[in-house]
Amino acid sequence: MEVNGRPMGKFFKLKNGQWLKVVFSYVSSNKSNIWYMSIVIGNTKRQCNDCFCKTEKSPKILFGKCTGRKAGLEPFIIALKELKNLEKTVHNCEIQIIGASDRLKNVYKWLMRYGYKIKNIQNFNRDIEILYKAV
Picture 1: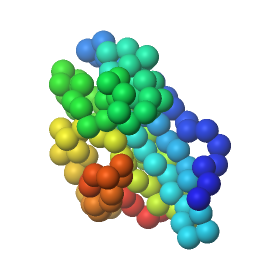
Picture 2: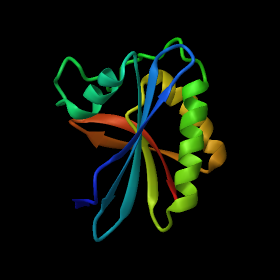
Picture 3: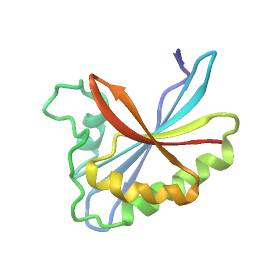
């Protein structure tokens, strides 16, 4: 398996003052081509970056933690626009949405209307639920 290039990240300032970071990364192997989409909401850009750059056991990691209680649906709408833009530009691959908090996972189940499906995978010795779509 090989990571092609650096992950592409984009920051968005939310109306409540928090930051949303949407990251796309591409992994290819001889069996599959996968685009991963991860999102994180933090009070600062630094907090968002720490979530992606720190190790699994770091206290700064936000994986699975809810930080955007005041954000409402705004992050979902922004992430959905970015996701639709990605779908228009990529072909013959799978898009997987990972790294969302439990609260956002419930919101992202609305993506099933857009053809996404749910599957469970094992990551860092724990089962996580992801949404995926073949494009």
